Amino acid sequence: MAKQQAEVKEAISQKVKMTPSEAIVETLVAENIKEVYGIVGSAFMDMLDLFPTAGIRFLPVRHEQSAGHMADAYTRVSGVAGVIIGQNGPGITNMVTSVAAANQAHTPMVVISPSAGTPTIGWDGFQEANQVSIFEDITKETVRVTHKSRVADCLRTAFRIAYAERGPVLYDIPRDLFYGELEDQILKPNQYRVDARGSGDPASIEKAVELLKDAEYPVIISGRGAVDADGVNTVGKIAEHLTAPVAVSYMHNDAFPADHPLAVGPIGYMGSKAAMHTLKKADVVLAIGTRLSVFGTLPCYDIDYFPKNAKIIQVDINPRQIGRTHPVEVGLIGDAKATSDEIYKQLQVALPSTERKSNRLEELSKVKEDWEQELVDLAMEDGSPINPRRALLELTKALPENTIISSDIGNVSSTANAYLKFNQTKRHIAALTFGNTGFAYPAALGAQLAEPNSPVVAIVGDGAWGMSLHEVSTAVEQNIPVIACVFNNKSWAAEKKNQVDYYDNRFIGSDIEAPDFAEVAKSMGALGYTIDKPEDIAPVIKEVLDKRQPAVLNIYVDGTQLAPPFRRDALQMPTRFLDKYKHLDHGVWGK
Image (tube, rainbow, N blue to C red; front, side, top):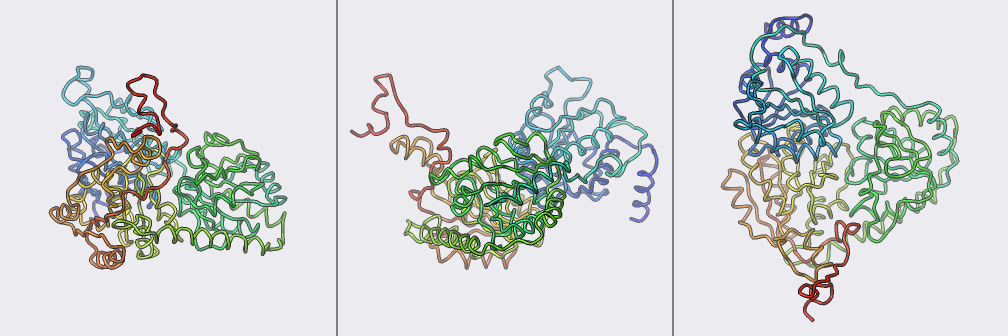
């Protein structure tokens, strides 16, 4: 081993002869890549053969889409860019959905994309596809290897852009370019990319501080950028200095500790009414590490909460996001922590002693208390067999504080947004705005690999579970002790709610017939439990936490207790013009 390490050190310090596969693998080693996710394929087998000796674990999945979701979550928890790979053609195209999801989630990722060999490009041969064109719109960049001597250089470029622009990059390499020989130097990451970011324009920071100093009712929105930059602690210092309430951006419930007196919870669909009523009052909004997405700021619960006249200070690492959805008074392009540190430093000088507004703390305490009581009251309404809110309430009460929770897309998964509270960062791994089902379980597997000693739970609807359950085999095979909580209401419930509200209960395509998921899990080697009483949730959670094995909880919940429509902004009551369809106008059916 010592000899191998010495050889690696020598390879980094000077140009040496190696194969392209060796150059790629050594670049991955330099980038601290410990796992690569995918399905074995002949296109990259020469590189794959080197992984065990290099100390890289190849983690085989059952479907390449899962590889992307695993890498996405691994990166969100660890901070290290995930790497995925597949066979040219169908293996790579199977990754489209998860790569698109990572792109909208701003997650650094490198997609190693073997393609047709250079002698056969353009012949429409076996497993050939123009992978670069397919991925151009769902990645930050597509990097093509044009010669075997460039394999390491192009891979360095892929990592540089993935980290710099916070998203996936396609590294496309014709399959014959893994072979041959070249001379190259394996560089250290600090020789070709910079991780440290600045704190933004000094004049703009001064203006931001002046706005905050004079604000009557400042409110902070903390987002994913604050989490990734380890800046949440500084967000708290600014909040305490100003006695400013802190909301968290949509589906980033871990972006500020829920037990902080100034925390008011998440905005966005099925978020916190406490956060929404508070944000409505803001005259200055300090948005740190959030793009303030359109969907994440839409009205919810019939509360149009995003302030129309507030002066917005937006901090984002990406200049493309500044003022993109809401006009800003001050835009700061910078690292969330570095910028927050500088704002706090200058605030202490500009506003050396602030009188704590005790009435504001009392006001926040009351609005939060009212919201918490409403959540409990809604959960305690009877359901057949279980009110889904009650199941969420019991689940969140039973889980340890350091639990990482991934959540999917769907009616119950979205309702979970109101019940999920975190006091530590990098605990909430949500599907975010690409909105694809089948995210939560493979994401939970990736999160568990990034943090092996923490409990990891996936919240999944039965529809999304149909797209995920094959990866239970991966969990069992690789001994990944994730707990899948399948909320089974026998329907695609988000769409069913649309059919209730807009289509007079005509349920077309939204009902699901499925096997007993607990028995299926057992047949795959995992623990399986069927739950139809709310009081059974906590004991089962305790049991599976103690056993530390892959587990599936098939939790039957009431399919009639549904959250409000997910896309009310994009739906409208139907009108029919042809006579044969007029009876389908809303309110006419059944008359």
